[in-house]
Length: 449
Image (cartoon, rainbow, N blue to C red; front, side, top):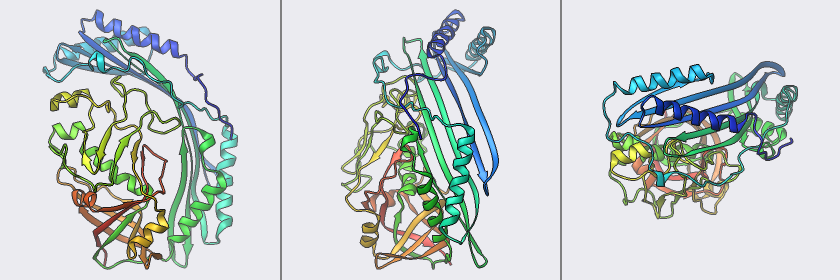
């Protein structure tokens, strides 16, 4: 794999910076008191193979322009993909026309000037992958071939895929802010089918990174996908019980994703969160710390400013288990009588503090219980904290995996689950915007046969 950090992009950055200013001037001509514009461009391709035959080749090259204008506290918006002058004029006119008929909203408006990222760091986020479609197809097929060699029980490859994407983002507003940055995203994945007798199981492995040099090798992904698939063969059901549970790191990410959703401004001001009015209250055990690190080079959630041009920062949401900050953009902060935390659009690299035990040591600590490696369905109620998900995984006794399990459901209350976290492993999964190790929860309800 060849990669290099590049300041060059597939677009002319100056052209789109200039375009954003043209749109703002047009909004002012139409009488808007404030305006903002987002320009997003991306290009790339994705290939997939099935049983070493090319299944799909998809090219992508898109651009979108979102325009938001304000007439006092009345707002209107329009979206286009055409950058011709006449199309832009029509879109701005449409947004301004809409704004004249909307109700006033006291919370509407741009970020304050002192909140904007007037001086932001140039981060390492742009690593184009020098790979052709033909090379990508060969890599996908080779991943399948290697996976099938690992175990005779691998019956077929459902899909192997390679994806590469370059993007460029610009945000500008009439408070004098303009900023933009390029970023890349690349992925290799392999989905396999295993068979033993009349039983068939499906599993997968993948690698994702901004820098292709940080992707796992084809051999590693093939081996991991094959082992994960055959490990699922012979799955059994469990009896209904209460038991300790370990969420494998890649699934534990979702636990903290639910937490971020619950402290996000939109849910809070709508009173749709079980963590309403929980600032400075204990949510997790004292050893838990959740901190945002938006400036990590090569990380998937890195950003120098948020979706409203506000400077990102190293927010600490949980310290000593206590909720120290909500996750807010400008609008939601105003609705709550608070200040933005630079989180319009979400968090940027949430880091979950971990302990010193690997997964094997966590299993020893648990002794007997359920290891969750797959989660299905969407049974989470953020208003009440009720949690119920279909899962797959492994039954553990004496600190060792005994057999795979299937067709079970785990349930609880997020409030109790967070308070019941006993340990967080050091097997941190970095393939996402939330970085955490595996999580051991003292007790949950497992519904089986």
